[in-house]
Length: 438
Image: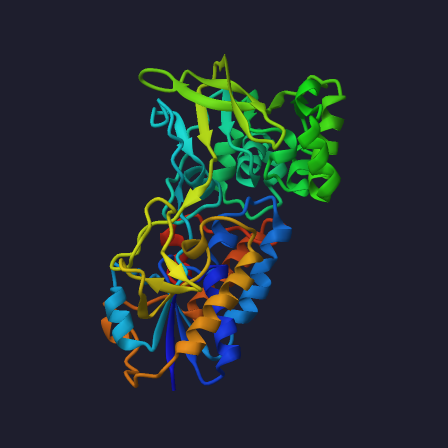
């Protein structure tokens, strides 16, 4: 019976395992995950006030429960096993390790204390088991750099009253941290114009639905040029985004306790400060007829005490696997991992963001996994090794039965508070529930 190892139990890895077992019903899959629980980006990359997106977990749950798939959490490639060891024991190995680091914002001062990467902040408010237990929320004025949904999530989570999150799965320490925030103003800076942001219409509208928060937009910055008018005429979502922004621009501020300022045509020049962040300087940009922007030389400085860099994610190298540090991904051809000479590495494949970079929504990983699985099935020649990974592990992994205990314990903790779930915030809490300790 052929055996395949999929490394990474987020959506990309789960979809790949599912599609593989459908294409080859005789294949069994070991699904390895370095965290003590599955679901990756859906559990630890989606803001807690987005339960509709988290419903994807329900469908992923059904896929992982399939008899042909064995879940092995708390197993890390490079720590517990090597890729070469996996290749020796399985007929194929699929890497679905995602993109877990912040892309570089290459401006002076980006590394000052008080300048934070989006990935770290998201990990904190999503209670990632390896995240710091507390977050410094002492700033009254904050800058967010970026024009995608992660930038919107960070802006909304910073500005949203903590008590508006009590119905979510947010753990106590995150709620307490947000409740203690001194924030008054958030400034979000986008390098291009409103028709060229990567916001989704729904995510943007949610920003304006927060209680006691004014969203402030300069009408002149949402007055479209020819390129912008062409974009909204061709693409419905762009039109919805611009309509929302123009509605906000026409409103008078209510005097709410917190304000979100959306700035377009602003490119970061530097993060100001000596020992820590004291401000951010941006340059006004101007678009050409195709929407491309260039600097005008006109600079503006904003006094802020914290900067959040939401300019994208990048992948981390997998020990023993070719890696492109510029693209932050594994080089491949139709999902087949390529060596330094551009030749396929036998039996080694990639899918998801580690394969194509951090672009697209969660659902996009389905079609991506399909391509990789088709390549794998075309190449698959069982080698008869059949050893799998068990003899290499020095401690017992968290399997499906243990995850179900964690799941049940979180649901019970939520029910006790009148909510669906309360997420465990530390690795110790998760493992205690998995092994029914304490």
